[in-house]
Length: 183
Image (cartoon, rainbow, N blue to C red):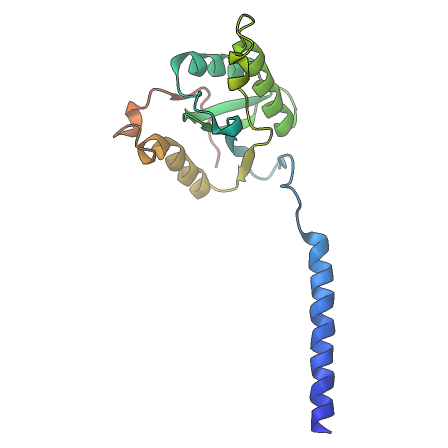
């Protein structure tokens, strides 16, 4: 009898495990969630990372820096706060600005504007090197502590990469808009 009761418990455990596996398989993400959820209760501040296609090292130069600044200033749906351009990726903070446009649409828009404006019609082979990865990583900042941590991460990136000794010496960084207050 004792053997039979323990067998039932084992069978019950196995069935429970299988049910949990089935339920959890419905919740697995095949792709990251799209968009940024706006809330009236807390400020909407987004930390964004965008990489170049095949991690090409073409971002950190004066021409690209100026063109990106211009495109961001003209793409008024979201405001760009602090940012840093690394050779193969960039980081920035952004928040809703003048028009209501989804965050992912805004990122696609400024990436396409940059690519179009940076293409040299006389150099069809060279235009292909200034491409972006199709996706990006973004993360909504939910607290002052998280914002301060990400800000420090952004500004220290060139130092961690060994490009400069002090963060303030990196020429490909800036702040286009200053938020009055996030929290």
